[in-house]
Image (tube, rainbow over all chains, first blue to last red; front, side):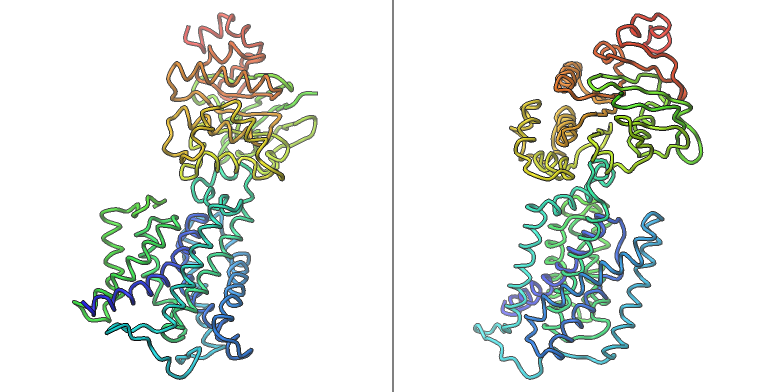
Length: 286
Length: 234
């Protein structure tokens, strides 16, 4: 019972990180119709941006977070303008392959700038809180609170702001959005900015929870896609739900199978979803 | 000066011309109806005028200015609104959001514009919180037209606004279109229900294989025995 509760806590934590990545990936799919394979590496870049702020400016990681989000948002928009914009009108598969190349470039840049070894934001041991037999690190609570705050902000943006509504409209019906006079390019740039910022947050939280490593994002790409598909492709709220389900399933699976199979659990859920409910929990664009 | 004039349009997809010298003329407070058999190029003419199908040859003039092949965004900016036949609402967005997005390109408050649309379609006010995707075909058509009216257009282009509606709703839709026209908005529409549409048209065009076959006032076309025999099913 205690073990179950502990795993659920870990699962919700991992789930929040996956959800932040999946919201961006699903919005990019909704608006641009391609699976962004560089999304995991965008997360990693965000985490390293925060590391740079922490080490160079000597600021706490939570102050570095918004700076890293901003930088990653700018980077995501720049990548779109330099790479994807030119090939937007061709087949989606070409965009997909290009995003794969972008992923490799980003990862190599990280390795060149920051090296290939593990790094952390703060050295030393953080004393965990013990609630009875359950262990909870203060960082965990911070991550969960910050992730929740970001999800609420995304919700307000999507439902209250003109740009957010335009984004949902484009995801719903691209042709009609153009006919209506919605400026597609501006919406696309905002989608990248928000996707990039959320990816950075996910990367920073992952770095706080574990460590920084050049492939930290790449290894999470599969669970993020699984969360996106489970939630319904193109559906931000589905992505949140999908992230939490996949996160919990991955952690809880360690009760019965070795921990190294965690990504396989995400993969299995993805395959089962695609077979039995390809439109996802919330009917998506599949 | 005409509100809209299309001269000698040649347009189509992938190098094949569907329009072959199509001509159109819409005065500021006209209701103009395009009828014709399937595949005549009626919808293509609408799309070409609105910049959705590339025009190979010919010109489109709006209030005397050339707008040939401009992006839909620019068309909306000039006061031209277009309602496609299918997939003409944002299904996961509420009625209110659908309408608000209609006015995306306009600055300032939407309150007054919304009131005008609700005056034409009172039902939309009751249903404003509902997602457009769960509404009936007739209601969705109202949302689509309401969305187009949000830019306070001078020209409203409707592609088969009565497609798939019940006879009662068809009558109601034509009545609404007359009401919209009475507000001083020029209407250009493609219709399958040719008789009813021509009955309210100041001007009608019979299009076949991308060419103008007949053009006259709506009632005159209805009275023309050749048109009746060949295009209106006797």
